[in-house]
Amino acid sequence: MQTIEQTRNALQQLVAPALQTESLPLLQAVGRIAAEPVVAAFDMPAFDNSAMDGFAIAFHADSTNTAFHLIGTVFAGDAQSMHLQPGQAARVFTGARLPANTSAVVMQEQCEWTDSTLQIQQLPPAGQHMRRAGSELAKGSDILQRGQIISPLHTGLLASLGVAALTVYRKLRVAVLSSGNELCEPGQALSSGQIYDANRPQLLALLQACGFEAIDAGIVRDDPAQIDARLKASLAQADVLITSGGASVGEADWMREVIAGLGQLHQWKVSIKPGKPLGFGTVLGKPVLMLPGNPVSALVTLWMIAMPWLRRCAGAADAALPQRRVRLSAAVSNHDQRPHLMRSTLECTEQGWLATVSAQQGSGALSSLAQADCLVEVPPQTCFSAGDTAIAWLLPQTGTQLL
Image (tube, rainbow, N blue to C red):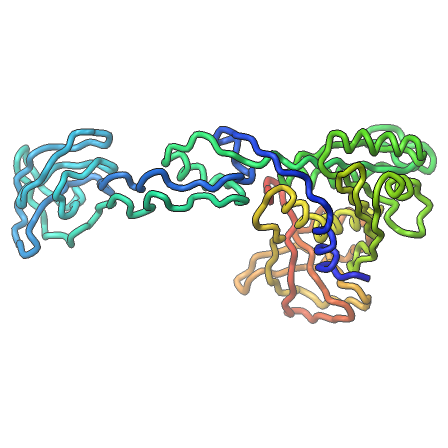
């Protein structure tokens, strides 16, 4: 069997879809991947300005005078230029351009003034409450790197630099296809021996939450001609095709045979639990992944093995999955030869993150997956005691976009 890392590396040998770009308005670009670097077009701030409402004053370094002659007022947005001589002051408001030769700004709560005079309590240190031009960012500073995910927290800075649109990578189109005579669409009546297809909705939801364009390729029956036609139709509208089920060598499944007949397919056994069987290859010049049929195995395999590759195919510079060190609330054991990725919930405590491993760890137990925050990795032939630390691979939560 191959390790998780070996399998991830093997996926890199697949021909990645060609990256395409598009230009989007700033707000629509949030959550997308930058296709071009963005640098500051000018200094930030662009000019010296006041950090608060108060008075700009000018004084000599050796001065002790706390009385000033008030010569005017500058509001935020005023374009006029004012110059202070030592002993002069001007009333200023937050964000207002500071007069030339300003030594410091004194907040108005520490001042007494008339129309022409200003009295302060004591001389402030030079530069107090002044935002110097370029003090935050110099012209040419990096704002976004190619391959960086554009977060909501980038928008304020980009807008302040006058950026109205961004060049981003077009979303990677990933189709998900289920096969099997036993599968039925949710909402339809079940016939004897049928089950509802849980894999496809679950995989599509994960892909969509991670920023991909998830394409529902539906359910196809176990018929070679129908599978052949559905594969070709799905690949015609997608960059990558994912199927669930039929990845095990011993399974009597037409999906594997049709894929192998149309292109190239590699069968792998991965040292991972839940999971293990995985198929991947190229059909009609496009990558195809075959995931296990058990619903938890399919999601864990997609997340732990295929997701870093998919992120790179989408143009992301950082394809690493989120993880953290956690303490275990109770003892857990893994007597298998494969690392066991156990569904767990997380709690933030005064001592750090505490993980509680679910009692339901079967490869078909969707109830524990629905409640899980992470997958705690327990190495082969390992027993952890309560309080021991382990690696937890974080799972996407409601409202979280990871790509």
